[in-house]
Length: 144
Ligand SMILES: Cc1cc2nc3c(=O)[nH]c(=O)nc-3n(C[C@H](O)[C@H](O)[C@H](O)COP(=O)(O)O)c2cc1C
Ligand SMILES: Nc1ncnc2c1ncn2[C@@H]1O[C@H](COP(=O)(O)OP(=O)(O)OP(=O)(O)O)[C@@H](O)[C@H]1O
Image 1 (tube, helix red, strand yellow):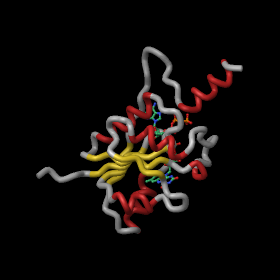
Image 2 (tube, protein in one colour; image 1 turned 90 degrees about the horizontal axis):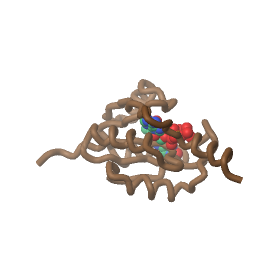
Image 3 (cartoon, helix red, strand yellow; image 1 turned 45 degrees about the vertical axis):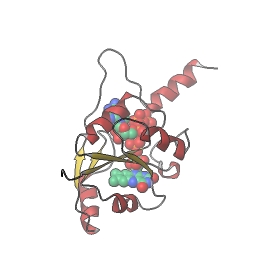
């Protein structure tokens, strides 16, 4: 029997776009089961908070083909879902502010044996790929 290798990806995922799909497809390729932790609105403090409610974002992420399960994040301690999922690999997004070494240290401190990798960026050559923030900006610019 082939052993299950669990992978974790995470993010806000407010208004899905092809960059999200690329990240999740790439993350899934690191193992056999992709678990996605969806950030709680109250923890998204490095940019404008998400428009779409927590549970609705998790429902849409879980419906994506590469995803086995979407988990709503913990409100206070980001390592609680990690301890529950027990991943073999955590794949960070290409532009996420988290530092691989700092996360690896925190995992080691808690006795969690898990690799930390970084995904690549999707850049569209034929037409501009709009991030969530850019979709929202375009709506504000073009609609009454
Ligand atoms: C390993 C890891 C686990 C995380 N777990 C949670 C969590 O349980 N709850 C949460 O609100 N945010 C969690 N986050 C934070 C967010 O998913 C995310 O890093 C942050 O909001 C930036 O998301 P963005 O890439 O969509 O900007 C975690 C981040 C990492 C790196
Ligand atoms: N073009 C892209 N290529 C690869 N990964 C992406 C791309 N856009 C977003 N991601 C990844 O998807 C995850 C969730 O991203 P997030 O929800 O912050 O979307 P975003 O479109 O980057 O948002 P915002 O425009 O508000 O910054 C992050 O890990 C991020 O690196």
